[in-house]
Each structure stands twice: as structure tokens, then as C-alpha cells.
Image 1 (cartoon, rainbow, N blue to C red):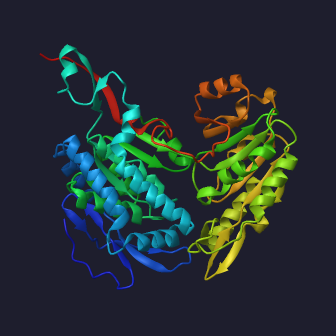
Image 2: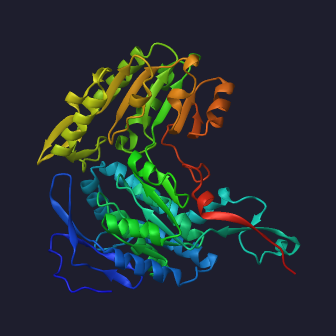
Image 3: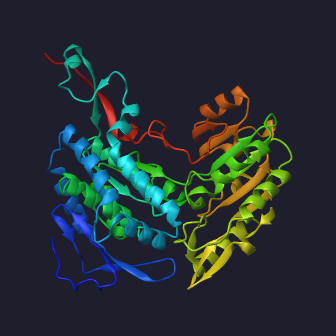
Length: 465
């Protein structure tokens, strides 16, 4: 499919769709703004029909052999990190992502490098998920005596990517490693990383049908889910609720990540870790700590956290020293108003009235928020905002796990082995860390919310002559 369109304005980056037959610049295009409100790019928006035809074309091709996929992923990682793609070299891409997303440039650069690293090691990353008794290829000699084959549950995997940083694009290449064809719908909040990565994959040896890039509206987004076999989506509680009954959709929802400190540990020994877990990555990630619970008087702990976070200087996103995210000033004020509403009844140490730090040119940095709770109010503990914002509360054994449920990560700073057992046994807690490990820590062998391959693959029985 093609379209006759005017050329993109000279000062705007053209972000074309990447379909099964190459790039496609649509008539329907959306201007992408920096957080200061400056137009920086034009994003092609494809209609639902284009989506369904593209995914239909993906179904018609068989996956590349594993060795070719592994080589192409390694080459794509190199190209992503070193080449001019879509008119941008790596530094130019990082700068523009930072300006669009509001993520500090140093955090953006680290996230982009983590994507390259994840792509390079995508094949290795799926291995911890494979059962030790399962073969990846039926041609392995051991299958003559009977074995399990680790097989795909489908052929096309769709991704509705989040826009809070490049790092979310480090996960879905694992589906390519497993032989899926992948359809990526980027977030309009940060469309560049997906575009750069799909282009790099194609330049590295993947076919156009193997990975497609489909910016689209809500109707097109629904069509991607309908047309694919399996899908991964990111979003808030509304997205979680929408797909709760659909086993073909993996939902990455709110993190509601927490730190729990029991009375046998001195929180002062972990203050650096706590503040780092709150503020690193701009406080925008689902793995940033949003609540700290302490088995004791939480007021001195909250005051110490607030003192540290208050010292962070509001800076523009392009400043290498920047830690805090930026947003258009009206959006920043709306977030502060939302925090004020949610914080009613708590004690504000760093309250909503100081969150918005104007930087000029119509945008603002978001200063941290710290609130002390008289008791572990679950509704407040689970309020997650896209900047460093934390709720500090007392916790007691009588409270049990109730305030800790529905968390992506719990870091238990505790010597209580039984507590660790209980946290690991709780179905609504995805990951449990213990001790001196930031809640944002990740590694290929550590599942994020289960291994992606848990959803993508299944075991089939096989025996042959």
C-alpha cells in the first residue's frame, strides 16, 4: 500500500509506518511535540484495514531459521546503537526521545543502550524460561526416544508499547528470537525507539514481514489485538480491567512497587537504596518504588527520604545532570492536582503544591512527592504517578500481606525467612527481592512479570523413528 503525500516539513522528522512491503507515509499524520510544545516530528497513522492486511501478510511467511534469527538480532543491536537510522544517529535519537518523553537525557541514553543489549542477547534471554526437559527443535537426537518440544502458541505477536522510556522495547525481541512475527504499535508519547528498532532489524536481515511498525488510532489498536495470535499491552488499571478475561493478552499494568523494612533492620543503612529505588529512571517506571512500609515509627524515615529527594535540582531534560522528568506545564499541573486529591488525609512532607517546577518555554520539571500515612491505606499506597512520588507508612505483623498485595516488586529488607516464604507464596506479588537490591534491578534470568516465553510457548509431546 502506498500514498501520495506532501513531503515532511524540513525541520520535522518523518516517522513512517513500516509495513510488510516497506515504509508507508500516510495522508493521516500526527505532529509529535516535545514537552516544551515544539513540533519535532510527523507520525504516520495507519487505518485498521492496513493493520489487518499487514498482519495477514505476516502469517504467510515461515520464521527464519534460528541461527539466522540469532545472527540478525546481534547485528540489529549493533546497528541500533551505532548507525544513522531514519535520519538520526544514536545521539540524535537519544536527544529527541528525551525531548519528546520528558525523560532525562542520561536516563534515556541508558535505556536505549539497554535495548541494544537486550536485542543482542534475546536468544540467551529466553533460555531460562525453557523447561530443561524440552527440546527447541524436533530434529534433536533425543527426540527419537520421546521428548517435549517447546513450541510456539501462535505465529504473530502484537505489542502495544508504552511511552515512558526506551527500555520497554527490550522485551518483545524475545518473540522474534522464538520465531514469532511481531507487530508493534508505538506510543505517541515516544514513537522513535520502536521505529529505530524495527528499521535496525530489517537492515540486519529480518524480512519486512518479520517485524512491522504500525502507528494507529484506537480502532487500529483494537484491530492489532484481534488480528494477532497473542499480544502484550501496557497501561493503567483501565487496561488491566479491559483485558482481564482475555488469556491471549499479556498486560503490563501499574507496578505498585514497594519496599518493606522490618524492625530487625535499621532503615538508615538502606536510605541510599530507598531513595535510588524511588528516583532512578526519573521515577517513571513500573519498577520504581511507590510505597515504603516500616515496622516501627515511619516519621523519621519519611523525613529522611523527603530531605534527600528535596535536594534534587529541577533541570531541563537535556541537562546531563537531570534526574527529574519534565512535562508540558498544564499536564504537570494536572498531575499535581491529581496528587493533591489522592493525598487527602495524609501528611505532606513534599506535597502537591511544590511538584511543578517551571523551566520556561511552557514546560516544567516534576519535583518529588513524599507523604506520610498514619496507617497503611491500600488505596493510597497503590497510587502510582510518572515522577518520583512515594507513600511512607507504618506496618505491623497484624496487618500481614494485605498492604503489599498487587505489587510488581516487593523488596523485603528483613531477616525473617518466614516473611520471604509468605511473600513468594502470595499470588498477587510478581517478584520478591531481599536486602540491598534496588526495586528497578533487572536481568535476563529474572522474570519481569513472569517470563514472556511463559505466554508465547507451550510443551508438546513428540517421538519419532
